[in-house]
Amino acid sequence: MIDDALENCKDYNAFIAAMIGLGCEVKQGTHLSFKIPGADRFARCKSLGEDYSEEAIRERLAGLRKVIRKPAEEVFVEFAITRQTKFSLLIDIQQKVTEGKGEAYEHWARYKKSGYDPNLFEAERADLTLHKAAKNYFDKLGLKKLPSIATLKTEWATLESEKKTLYKIITN
Image (cartoon, rainbow, N blue to C red):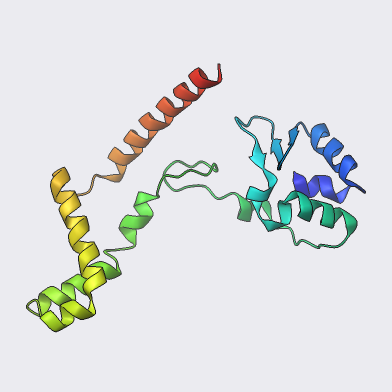
């Protein structure tokens, strides 16, 4: 939306008016922020990337900065589990499972295979320590095996609905 508005504007005030015309709420304070139609919160422009800070927008309007627009398909990518395009702090567990055991595990396996060679331990101390700490943590939780993707999807959907309920309570 910002890129579209910038294409048709000559100055900063016209840009702000264009964003309002597109249905956005504008908040100008320490940081320029917009709330797009249907969004729950304002988003600071600077969090969208270096080409979207207030200073960068002013430079673009003055012709001092050129930006190559990305196609919309590259900007929003569906998450594998939720099929949503919103960003979240949740980890894509399915991707982590398919990535394999990881480098630290490989170092630990070489160390174990060597008969716990003290020289190899010193060379791989950091990775082996991480592996042991992770194993101890999962042992304390009593986990013998990771949960299935279906179980994680169900749990995530439950947490997502609880989050939405809590946001409604807080905002009302």
